[in-house]
Image 1 (cartoon, rainbow, N blue to C red):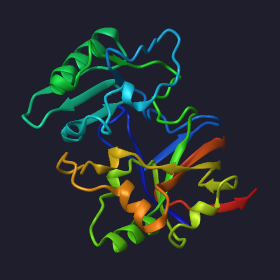
Image 2 (image 1 turned 90 degrees about the horizontal axis):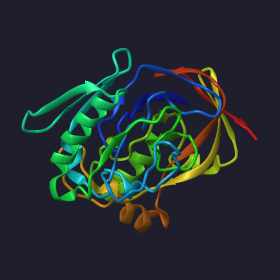
Image 3 (image 1 turned 45 degrees about the vertical axis):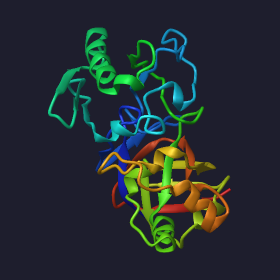
Length: 252
């Protein structure tokens, strides 16, 4: 098996950033993945005592399809986050300072318009991950499984709909569903597969048009009797891995 694509998503719901390589720590996730999020005003998120909340408490594609049209990129060396809207309006500010986050939050709130609830706040809490999962995980999807779904549907489904960290090749479609509880060597890291990824309405959004133009959840249910695509894995031994690295199934 081989890593074909590697991504992180610094702002929950916004642009994928392609990586050539990354390094993870035991119990952690890909650095800067889901490190920032815009909490809706009624979310009750407390940065002084951060706890996991469901995605609908935040700006997310499941509720806010139009955010797929935003271009966002984060530069860890400078802490600058750039977000550009389709009309060319842009915010560039330091996402690690209160004033910078306030400016970014105001920009995103204005873009959401009527979809903003109360007074949203843009957050970064060191050590906290704004994941859809309660724990820190790395998401992996088998390219063969996506291609099998596309063949059954008879249409292209852009991989960015599914917002995975790692896309891999080298095993038959859906073989990864047998890996729950198994360990994987990814380059220099070891991960344990903990659960399948149940897909949600966010996958309806075309990342190229920001329109809801398909329903992969229903397609999965219709053709396979489940709504899963991909697996979540916990890092049990830290290390580096990169595009092109081998993936090896180690077993229990």
